[in-house]
Length: 297
Image (cartoon, rainbow, N blue to C red; front, top):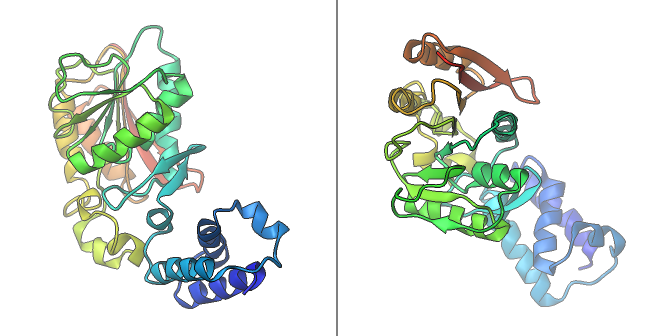
């Protein structure tokens, strides 16, 4: 079997399995089996696979036909121009979450003094690391078991130690200067926090069985299930934020589902009636992030 036939046969197999991007996925799996870049596939379509390479490719295809996410198979996912290690202990970073990074960076770049950012529900660390790298905070990594020496810049918090191990690996790989803390939301931080960026579970419990197999069968349910209406974790976060956010110059940014904008904005308004509440849309034009802005209230 040569490269071109492997690409074609792989794409056909994945298409029959219902994979959304069969040609791309087949190419990336073949690249993993061969140790190549994708451009090399185009340059050498006639190259014959060894028996070991063909066997490796077929094993990878078999995993993808079972709808195992491509990110878990490859072990890496690109986000905000960076590659992140991912495992089944964390959600695979989504392109729409890049809006949360954009909002965070815009806020932090306008500060004239050090600001404390809390990345809540950090998972793989994609948000915290992307912000750190973009700001040039890449001196080194401090892994904390307590908050006695908390960074005045970026703290990534998650209730899952397994997720924090993945975040630690990503922070180390990118030399991001962030602190990693096992916590229930932002409970350990006394404040004031200038920026709270949160990508918490927001899928309503009843909708989880309806999700595509890649999500429903493989991604951690604890990182998906947001309770009856999907907003249980945000209610708790807003309650904790009341005594922790900097009400002189602070921002809370929360990612949510495309149909949750008005409801989450209403919850934020109930918690902070004098703050400026806004709904931001992603590149697909869908409601994606609710922000709560404080300016000397």
